[in-house]
Structures are given as C-alpha cells and as structure tokens.
Image (cartoon, rainbow, N blue to C red; front, side, top):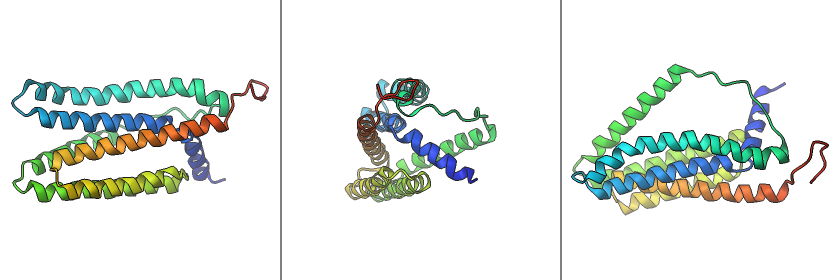
Length: 212
C-alpha cells in the first residue's frame, strides 16, 4: 500500500471545493493591499505606524478566523456531499515553527535592505520576477504532487504577473505588494470557480446515501 499516494489523493479531495484556496487568497490579497497602503501613507504619518503594527495582527487574525470559518463552511457544504475524513491529530514540531519564524525574519530583513538601496528601479524589477518564478515552482510542484490541475494555471499566472510587475519597475515594496495582491485575487477567483463546479457536480446525501 502506497500511503503517500493515498495522502495525496486525500489532500486533492480536501482541496476540491476551493474553500482553502479562497482563504489563502484572501490572506495574500489583504497583506498585499495593506503593504501598499503603508507604503503610500509615508513613514512620517501616524497611519504608517498603526498599519505596520496591525499587519501582523491581520495575518494572525485571518489565519485564526479563516481556519474556523473554513471548517464551518466545509461542515455545511463539503461534508454533506462527499463525506468527512479525519486525520491523525497534528502534533506541533516546534523546531519547524522556529525555523519558519527565522526564515520570515530573514526574508523581511532582506526586503528591508533591498528597499533602502539607491538603485531601486533595477532591484524593483528583479525581485518581483524572482518571486514570480518561485511562486510558479511552488504551484507546479503542488499541482503535480496532489494532481490538482487548476494549480498549473496559477503557476502560469504567477510567472506572468511577476514578469509584468518586474518590467514596470515600481520598486521592491510596491512590486511585492502588487504581486501578493494579484496572486491573492487569482487564488480567490480560482477557488470560487472550483467551489461553483463542486456545488454543481455534488449534491447533498442523507445518511442512507441517497441524494436529497
């Protein structure tokens, strides 16, 4: 028995309704929008400091509330149609969490350093293109691994929007802000399309397995 293939099929089934995709898309779009607003507010304004402090709270709030709201939607939409699957309770790996925070800190520091460099036009073109390539690789890997074909479209979009923003040369901060906003909106649209298709192709069933 190939447990890896079984898990991949289970994950693909779990992503089939697009709800998780919509949630991640809202998070990305929100982060991109807030970062752009912070940039336009200017460092000397009170809004700059309030929004900068609220950015992390926004991310935590969306992650916390999105998980619960997503589970509630699945209980009302997904489980009555295709059933419920429970995995082994997740055990936190604190080393991985620490590594994630270190990576986020290093990434934020690198972006901060790049944002202060004098040759913003050149760097502002390279960073979004690099981000687009990384996003395309991640989406392609996920699409191939769990066989969710719509992720290939997101991979192409990631590469394309990264190139477009890079050519525009809007700078590091705005470039990344527009990139995450665009990717987030694309994921929301992709998730909504998947959800509509899911609702049209699956009807709720009762406990006897008959369509309602």
